[in-house]
Amino acid sequence: MDRGFALSLFLILIAWALVIFGFYIIAEALVPIETKDKLMSRVIGIAKVVGAFFLLGILLYAWFLLTKYFVVKIKTSGS
Image (cartoon, rainbow, N blue to C red; front, top):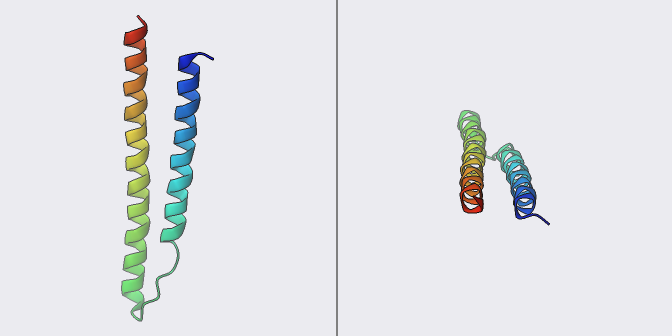
């Protein structure tokens, strides 16, 4: 198996794992919080969802940067 092909498959699997993990975090954030104050409960719920999307975005951005680094490294070492 070619090194580039194996790396591509590995990075694709990592991307799917990050997306699934992000959806899990968002689903966990949507679980209602048991508080007596309805307004505070909504504010905390919205903050959790926004934080989950933010975390998912950071993870995917880091994955893209890592992918770019590996692709450049393989191309320069192969030449």
